Length: 193
Length: 193
Image 1 (cartoon, chains in turn brown, orange):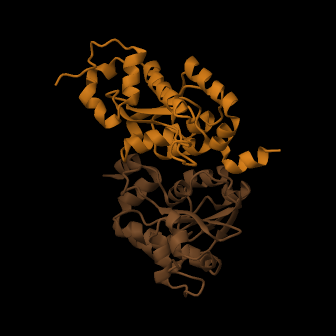
Image 2 (image 1 turned 135 degrees about the horizontal axis):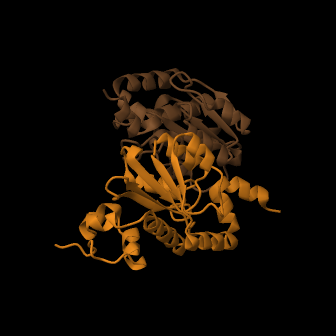
Image 3 (image 1 turned 45 degrees about the vertical axis):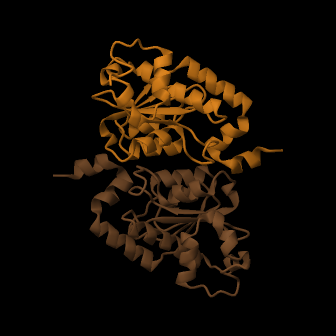
């Protein structure tokens, strides 16, 4: 069977959304490899933001992550925060993408994350020896970029306005969920009057 | 129905192994709450080591974790490393127990881990505001204890000789797996001649 998305397919929000929603293992059956070669870093970040949107639509934290192979530009893992969906105290966009990728050498990969990584994820990114991290939002959070650079990870900031607006909206709507995701329920209890 | 394990049941390796193997949510149906009150920190560490042994028997990394409520002494989460079992680049004994516990306030809990936490898990432990961590092995690994104390987490070392012997045996048998679990497959590839 021919691919539904080929190298001729225009790079639209709708096409990127199909990629966001498809299981990573199913991508080769639906999307021609050459389509991915056309995708800029900004396009990959859009896929991460569409995953954040998916999580938001499910009632969860809107943070997404995508990992690509630097040479082929193929997606090797992706996911979004599942604090609410999996009742998991720590499964951020980055860990979700890393778990989806499975055991592999991340030394020649780039991880795209819609929001500046927390201390835990930043530590995981350098301990798993990622080559590069691209961050879509240093407006709503920031702080680990310097540490990542010192540990030898290339760090690029590529802010996505729609992703920043989505996270700001969520933070205003659900401040407790945002605090829990960063510092745990203990912090939420302490913050209550 | 009466509990199979009651406050009268002797604290034996076999009884602790039942607790290690039962799903956390099933414990109240099988084990009377008062049994847990009898368990010393050393007994809880034995449960963590039995979880490590379970993982070893499955071909995985022998590292286990148990979280208890400081007041009731009840187990609220437990698990073991699943690098091999789940093909997960980062699910250590600590994260496995935290995921099993689900979203809760860890401010009045203690996490028992059979091996000194890696940088990622240590960061997660203080960011989730655990009150205390008890470490069963600082012989095969160590290094995050000072940082944890500086972040306000109580740290107790309670070495378990059988757990230490098990980890040493595994490290000698599968050095690549040990390195991957700590530093990722990129480190394993670099170490190869």
